[in-house]
Length: 523
Image (cartoon, rainbow, N blue to C red; front, top):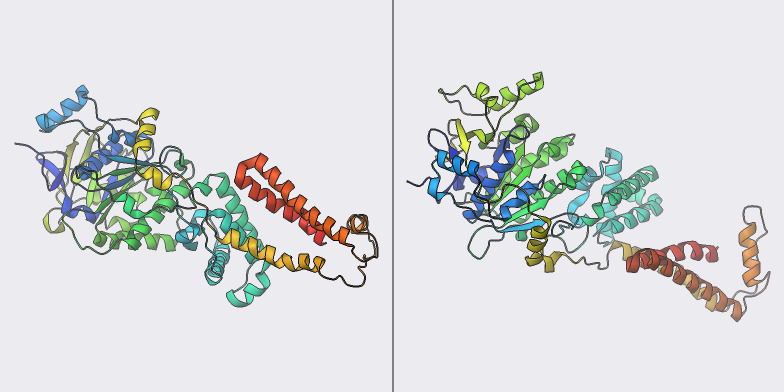
């Protein structure tokens, strides 16, 4: 008799087969265990099981190994032996799961972008590690953007907005509260650091649409979206904030569906402790709220981490499906983690749970899932089933071919730069400067007097006399010379920018030219 079921995912075998019910998968879950005990393989077999049932998944690939589910597995002896031992036998087949590869940096998969506005000031403050005062200034900046119709799409927009806020600090403080120049400077420095770390790849358009995580293949299987997170792990704050943003977007955009027969999407949160480390109280409350309420949207969330102690109790209490791999009790903290893990299971009179946790081998786990009416099953020592996909990562060539064949490339691979806060504020600055230019063409005043030369202004005064003469009216030739000088300054900046960075560099160069030479001429 086959151990496979259509309404359940076969996890492995204890005294009897162990299953994860599809209609209970949106009650969330937890996969824990020490490094090297098999958590990634458990994540893979769950993702493959959901995919076969037509449920799309999203998971972060920390070490690169998870991408192997997109390739057919190889019939290795230890896999076949395990399949035979758990009663899978002839039902064990190898095959690739339909997958989409994503990468925040756009290198190992399709880029995922969001706009600064969609991220919002709360998550962005977490993103930038701002203190309370700096977060307050950032909130004021977002309010100013809303009130003045300034679209915040990328980091360039936000930097321009912060300059605008600093320039108008006196006026804005009367309306919105005190704007500290020191806080604006601190935010600008953090934005610069974020750009250096590659965060500018994450902000921009086209913005990622949640619906693209919920696709199914032509044969009805759910597409597994795999995020390349190896480079992302070098910046844990960026990783945690991104996943929290994605979870929040799911919560905000998906409609209520109650308790469906199977989830609409399953979200695997690997290295989950990074989300909660040093997180402010307001963010912990946000995570708790999302986890508690998102199940009614038909979304299941599975946290993957080393110990249940990594998860706050308010969140841990929402995770009904548990897979516990081995833990080691070498230190007092380890012993506490073992006891905490044992206490989270429904006891089994035939099993010393606390002792068994330290004795589990690789590919073994203690399993307790939600049965009918949401009642947790008694914990069982279980041999985890082998995966159908490859154990190990895709090769570079396989990854490149999969990305090239995906329909997501045409939608997301090419960035879009439309008019937003940066362009609007730059145009305002040009319009403010325009009356001075028009004044040069209008009938000039009777005389233009050069101020007395001082030690601090000697160079500027000399330049004025050299270009426009002394205490004389501006002649038409001098007007032309003045306009020509401005044009040459901007063009020189453009050429410098192009030499440095193409079209975008040219825009920066023009701004540089206007800033240096334009201010000098106006002075």
